[in-house]
Image 1: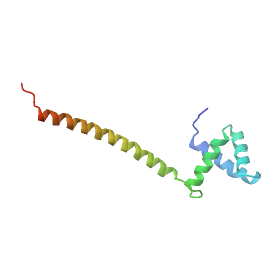
Image 2: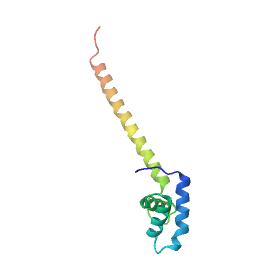
Image 3: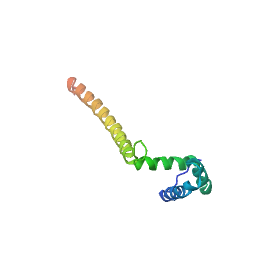
Image 4: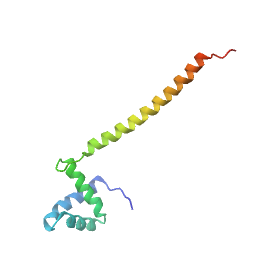
Length: 104
């Protein structure tokens, strides 16, 4: 089941995880405990925790804002490449028309 959680839910879950960590022998037991309380996947909570660490610079990786900007730029490049192909095709078409004008 793939469901979206609100940003508020994500923040609440991460706060609960922070509060639960000292009471558990390791991070994963705390993650499983909090995820069970909230009725969510432990993997979802673990990924959120890891993402927060990357965004805070506590763990190596690409921060969310840079990742989002890269995705936006990849989409823009794809659109520009399509536009370029259309313009190339149009220029070839019109070049052929100039080489062989139709006589009326």
